[in-house]
Image (tube, rainbow, N blue to C red; front, top):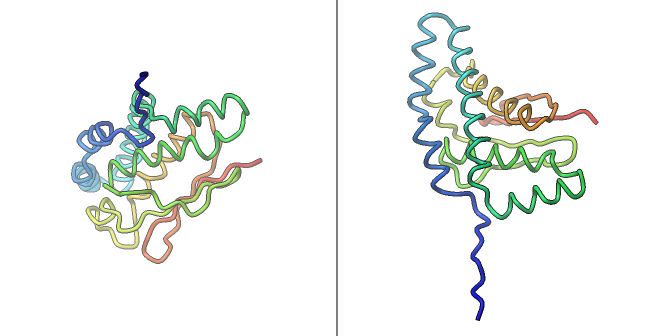
Length: 175
């Protein structure tokens, strides 16, 4: 009798833990607060830089720890030339936000060939930074999402809106 290989369609838990340990939200908030003592621009630049660093690490580990869902997705993209946007970057956004914010799932609002929109409710980073309506933590998310899309060779514009107390992140590409 041939034993079937057990394939995982879930994100690798070890990978998520590695990201969470390397980029603790508390440390990111401290970096922001230390840079803010110098200037608001320095603080925003620090968050932007950290967002880019996290994105690069997520892209690296996401390739090193593929799951069966990602393998099938890559095959579909290679075979059809379609689906890269928004499905491939969605996977990496999920890795980043599930690891950093300890979410169970990413709340996707819209996912089509033109737009990828998701929401983050009760963001711990936003709470740790505690900047009220200024929301400088947006620099982190913009850099994270833009870097993921850019490194995947996808040209998008990224916008973040405050929707009833949560951040709605929209990546839109021109067709």
